Length: 210
Image (cartoon, rainbow, N blue to C red; front, side, top):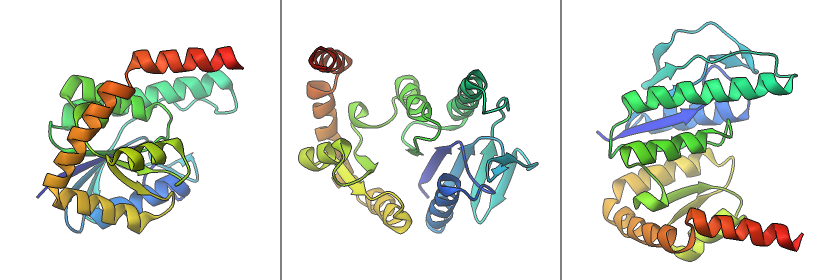
């Protein structure tokens, strides 16, 4: 059975949008796959609750990581919470995730995509440069969606479409040859169009035009 990891600051019992959606996605995938979640401290409506650091719910293994809980009304408190929470998730992922496993990362908190990037560097993970197709949860008009569509390197799922995301992950997992073809294209696109040097030049050009 294939293993899928989900990295998210928010998960059950959280009932706000990100936590609720990720919980439903994980539980839906657990019907056919081995699903494990690495998340932050348990919260509900963003208020911390006491839950075990490890538990299994509806077939999903949940690993909770601890971070600071400074007052979010203060800027530096939010920054420290962001850094400690993301770092603890990264540390757990480095210990638990194995090469070749599927990782689903959300952008909450904003540092989590960089956590996935570090995982890629340290364990040869994910996305374009690693030769993996992309499942983009994005509006159809967004730049990310345009890249995925034009380069034919993955799939686009509308934000909030839980069943659509579940179905897309299942489809990708069941079609390894198609994923391989898209992954080869993604690696070429990353190396030819989206290097750090090219991104740096693009930002410099943008700021000069402002």
